[in-house]
Length: 361
Image: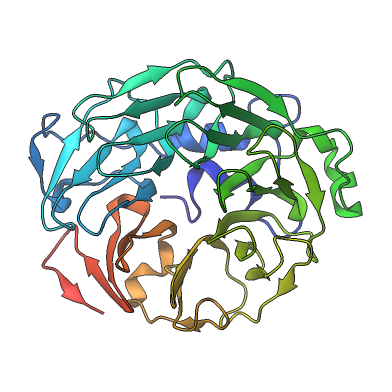
């Protein structure tokens, strides 16, 4: 299997984003190449994590008991008991889901390959497809409330809804966004910068992040954007805001950025490990988690001010962890390659084995 999440494989080299010349991006080829055989369980039926072999790209847990994981082959896994048991849900597609956003135990949206978006208002018993108007892959998705949401993806693509996903408008990275000199050799125009993550601080304040250290902010919920200065040129894969002022962004080259003023200034944080890629970050209260390549997990117990490395088994050195989410009580999950799942309970990380008994780390 790939050493990096398939949807971001082309950007896994420090500073330089790899692109196919005027053709299908390497990310699309990697997505197709990463497909594996489907599990045999029926939609809505209980499923054991031992059966899950598909890579998982997104997780979302609006409560400490209810949540979803999504990934390859259109897989959707749902729990209503904090991850003790799981059921497989079906949206009627085999295309991979690369991102998920949820508001409560009944309301969620998922997005992925070729601009697909599906929504549910009944806890996933049914998923309704939406037409976004874009065929570009969507790597990140965020909702501020039941009506307002924003997705980001390939080649500067952004999709926005103000009516709960029934209708979407498509936009691009604004032409006044300035790229660093390191982007010149790639031939990438500012409007084509890949965007990988989105996060609302509140209903009006939204941030998106992507290639070449690109961070953009919106003060009107996602209708218009302005560029913010990041002190790095590395690709940023994850961004998370807890309110309109406090946020973090992570990426390759072990980059961790933090802001306390809504992104007016971004400060570098010192990573406890080097030469790794960080793919996602989530902070709630005093607990924070960062996940990434080679089984990397970082933990914060002071609200994201400092980070320490969380030990993981050596056999995970070839596995990436793509997404992490904490519920309101501090419980949550992290997911990644080949069905890799971790349960988080406050400051404790526990791997849920797909090929053996559950054990604590």
